[in-house]
Length: 254
Length: 206
Image (tube, rainbow over all chains, first blue to last red):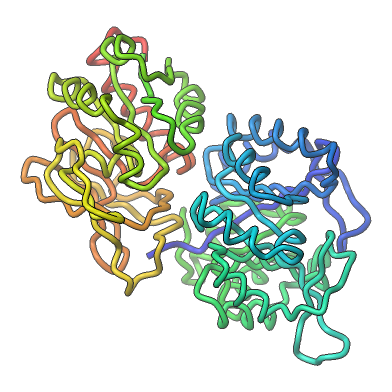
């Protein structure tokens, strides 16, 4: 039986790890290679690196960063942020990334998912979805793109189903409403998407306490939980998180 | 020196990175002389079986001869699958035949690919698992698996709705379906154990 995964997420800007609240007010959290290596040694199951600058100039920087990370990190890691085509995906995988996450580009040109899945295998294609509760349609969420700055008409659950059909191997689901608040994951969202697809769903946004992780796995039916603030700033260690979850009956890699 | 076979498939860089990290002397090569002089060989692989075995080309015979002559060999993922007699991944392909058995698809009753961390239970005295206790989690990412049919092989299994062979050992031939280079500290220990085996075989510089 596969274990539930604990995945620290490193938002990278100008070669530093940063963390904000509701996608704003960034706070420095350290060097990405050092922090990644520390998580790898501490027993994290995977890492996610998101290039939140995602400009043309930052592309070269992120490839160099991926190469450095691959020398120090011996667990699978995903790289995302500003990826626009299969050539960039190829470059990141060759540099040492195990998976690549695509967000805005997948909304604009959904074929990028299919093309990448066929060329590199669906296990390395992650569809990242930034979700915001819909103000007009109660109980629904809308897909936002461009680092959350641009709402679209797409419904999150429908987009996730389509993403799986296109060939995504995994969904990284971030609640923009919960992100950075430390008030808990949006488990109605997590459950709605998990129930709709057969590929793993990584719950993201809102982790503040250990029980939030448990709730995302049990109530939200998430296969993996992503967190940033609670581990970056030393509130909780990876081992502590896993011991807690195991104590409550969740299968973890410990 | 441990030589990682370079045959232009998937991501072999990470395997080299992991060996370097544990302090091993490692070289990526497809040169006959280098392979012959190696204290141990690693056959990595992230690709479909048919593509990988054809990309290996003439090196297949070189690796087979080296392993038959007693050189330690570690196959990883598709490199592990290639140790067996044949594979049924998108066709029928002959493998190296160093361990008897065949490679078939994971039953569709399970989620495919088998991707994530699963608990591996080695038989006692499997060299790669020395110092790792009775069971450990390792990272898997694959859609096909080996049905081991070799009485001389020791097998470590993992549970994926059925007993899935996660690692084999037959004399000097070793293989892991999981990725030791991506399995954190437990995976690095597997590589250390392989380096130790190579050291015994070679000149102590692995």
